Length: 356
Ligand code: 3EB
Image 1: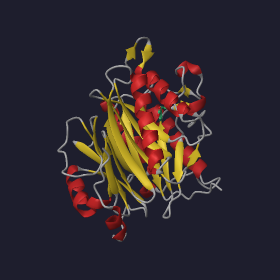
Image 2 (image 1 turned 30 degrees about the horizontal axis):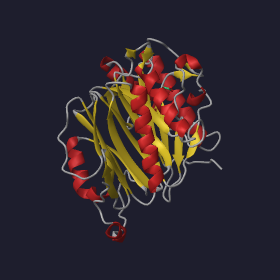
Image 3 (image 1 turned 30 degrees about the vertical axis):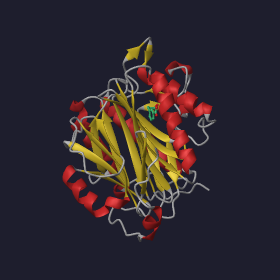
Image 4 (image 1 turned 135 degrees about the vertical axis):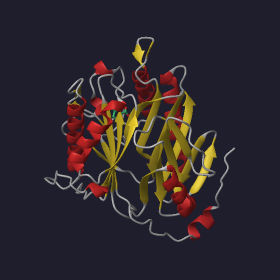
């Protein structure tokens, strides 16, 4: 069944090249338009770890062997946004029963889709169990960052919101492997998508990352039971020390202080609270005391808005906080709590990490 598409010996012979501007030595993230993606694809074909395309209509599927997912989710500042993860070396690709993956010496990107029309707890448990088996067998056993896209995330089925059912299945899969609950807990996000497939993509690594929590928020795996019988399993951020510069994956972040939603009904106040949370998480990962982030060039944001009409106001707020040059993409998505109007995730490159 398992088929390798690239010969590892040949892969290793290739020399690393500098990725250029936004490059980080081992892993680079780009948010690209379709035209930019076409250029990137021809320049870095054998180094692309994975691509997630966000748009309301199915984009042109590139002729490529890399793991590729279309997330049915309207993009607000372009027709389609291509989120591209590129490594410094040629990658080794593998596709096993719909779990597509690519890896280099350090990092694995993977994605899979499972039917989510029926029992979502069972679907999420099965999906996570497959991911754990897959990364463990290949030695990339540390889950760093997971993106969860869930159809009808706020819909109620049998008295349970589907996000709550998703959490039950995810929790069960982590528990079965003695993972999570603060140990080896990945950064994550969970958003509503259209269509009917649960879509998960992830980054995993050979070396453990370092978990970072937010002093303004209760850790999600300690949320009280009012949010569901099983807590969400994710860390507020995950720091990866690579041979190059460090990378901080900041989880989807919302207007939550402690465990409670703040500013119900007020998008701009939620945006400000969310930004304060992101800054607190980054400060936590940095040298004690260096809380302010002005280096917009090192921060990349993905902003999810429940209501498209909030786009301009939130964009203005984000530019005020991080500077007009901030790189941010905007998507329209349902957020996992019905009272949340937005969520923002971030990747912070070159964070001056001071975690011992
Ligand atoms: C929160 O802080 C908002 O279930 O994986 C953010 C990031 C949220 C990840 C997840 C949920 C998740 O609880 C929601």
